[in-house]
Image (cartoon, rainbow, N blue to C red; front, side):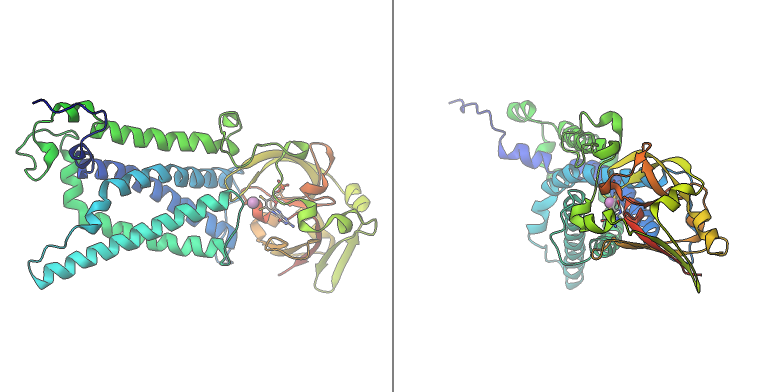
Length: 397
Ligand SMILES: Nc1nc2c(c(=O)[nH]1)N[C@H]1C(S)=C(S)[C@@H](COP(=O)(O)O)O[C@H]1N2
Ligand SMILES: [Mo]
């Protein structure tokens, strides 16, 4: 009697796909995404923490825009790849541990423990990153410190994993992906000549291609927040690219609770250097020499947009209080609470002729949501440090 033909793949078709040939190929791409995300993550961490021992580059002006765009794109691509990778190997986690000797038992358990750490860390990074780019902070812990610490755990566990699996990986990568030679791996049901059902189903090559297409599609669907040309196709981009004066808004003046203070006619910018200090109204700032620069706001969340900013050079303001060359400063916002209401700016940025205390965007006075009466704008810096509603600048040394 001929068995009935069914459209669903037979179970052995799945076991044929859950194979090192798939796991290693998807793993190579996933590893590449993790490497890019790790390196650009280190960049972002230091650019934000600005340790005094490190001189940060101020050129090219798009440095942070590109590096953080890559970070978010690599993390996004990693999501479908991680799912396919886990699907192709998870049965191994529950397989019985072969009992040969105490030593082999310990080695097996150690290997599984390291994979458990890798999987947990990888899922944590991808999930917290994805939640962060939607600008939703549902946790108590500091996102940046935790995401950074777990990245080291993930990359360490990844290196151990690659080292342990190297023989399997190199064997899998050097054999044809859809191997049908029974000699190749006698324990592999897919290694025997494929049945009609198996041939009709998805091949391993097809699965790897599908995973890569899904990763590419995920990137294209989100990266438009950074690349204006792709904005139209980026249906899941977290920022539409729209906002007052053509630049998206991260925190509005209302959210920051600064509407009254920012509109107050008694607003003064105070610049302090030791015992010296000057107090300037917005009109005073406008009557100082004005400069215009094209610089991007490049948010850590991956979106970015270029604005044409005009205002006073930071260096000119610091000269008013005779600050030394390349002085490090502390910048304070009218905003009273929140993590972004004050920032430090190292000397390489305060000295840079492109660093402005901006008063205008696209030739109009700054929108209240973009930081009216005055906001920082500097090259190659993350958006989070481009403080809005500035009212005090202190020279640190
Ligand atoms: N005072 C203050 N400044 C701030 C913020 C803030 O919340 N408060 N957000 C920062 C972040 S995270 C970004 S990305 C930019 C966004 O600037 P925009 O809203 O003008 O685009 O402002 C930065 N400056
Ligand atoms: Mo941001």
